Length: 352
Ligand code: NAD
Ligand code: GLY
Image (tube, rainbow, N blue to C red; front, side, top):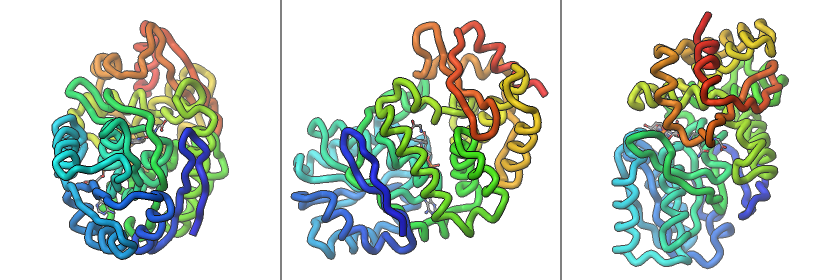
C-alpha cells in the first residue's frame, strides 16, 4: 500500500493498494469528520461491479448511503446529468455536512466533483477512481468539469477532494483498450519529466502497476502543489492535450480521451522535431512505446479540421495559445504561440 499527501487549498491523502475498496468506509470516516450521509455517484458499468461492495463498506462504519447512477461514457458528462444530480441531492435534503463519493473513471470524477463544488456552494467529496486514467490523473488535483456541446470541460471548477482511494484490483475488470487509455497519461508524465519512468515502461507495466501509479501521482501532486490554479507550470500536464482535445472534438467524442492524448503526444513531439528542438530518435522511441501499449499514434484529421476544433478550446487565452512541447523525453516545456502560428504547429505535428 502506498500513501501520499497533496498540499493544496484543501490538503488530502491519496491511498493506493490492492483491496482498498473494502476499507473505503474507514478511510472516509477519517477524512470526512462530521458527515453522516453520503451519495455514491457512479456510472452503470462501474455500479454493476463495485457499488454494493463500496456501499457495504461505507454503511459498516455508520454512514447512511444513497446512490445516483448514470449511463457510462463521455456523452454523460453534461449539464443535463449534472442538473439531475443536483435535484436528486436537493430532494433528499443533503446538507453541507454531507458528502459525495465519486466511484468510477474520469467522467464520474469530473462530474461528481463539479457537483460537489457547486451544490449548496460546496460540499465535500471523495474520489474512488476505477480506471488507470482516473487513478494517475483526473482524481488528483481538483479539476472538475462538465462538457458543453461546443467543447469539453468548458464549465468547471478547481475543487479538491477530501481523500483519493484507489483499489488497484478494480483494474482487473477494465477492458484492455480502457487500460491502454490510462497508459497514454502514464506516458505523458514520462515525457514531461521522467526519463527513468519512460525506460521502465518498456517492461510489463501491469507487474509494477502500483509503483508506476504512485510515481505518476507524485509528479501530479508536486505540480499541483506549485500551481494549483493552472496559471503556469501546471499547464505542462496539458502535453498532448491541446492536440488531443481537438482530435476528440473532431470525432464527436467517438475517439476516447486516452487515444486522443496518445495521438496528441505524437503530434507534439513530431512538431518539436520539425522545429529542431527535439531529437528525432525520441519521436521514434515514443511511437514504439505507444504502439506496444496498444495506443494509436496517427491522427485521422487534417490540420484545418483540428484548428477549427482547437479554437473553441478554453486554453486559448487572448491571442496566445500555450502548447507544451518535448525538448526530449523527460524534458517538456511550455511553448506559447500566437493563434496565427498555431496552424503551422498543427501542420508540423501531422507531416511525416
Ligand atoms: P470513463 O470514466 O468514461 O471510463 C471509461 C469506461 O470504463 C467507462 O465506460 C466506464 O464505465 C468503464 N469503467 C470504469 N472503471 C471500470 C472498471 N474498473 N472495470 C470495468 N469498466 C470500468 O473514462 P476515463 O478514461 O476514466 O476518463 C476520461 C475522462 O477524464 C474525460 O472526460 C477527461 O476529460 C477526464 N479527465 C479529467 C482530468 C482532470 O484533471 N480532471 C484529467 C484527465 C482526464
Ligand atoms: N489533467 C490536467 C491537470 O490536472 O491539470
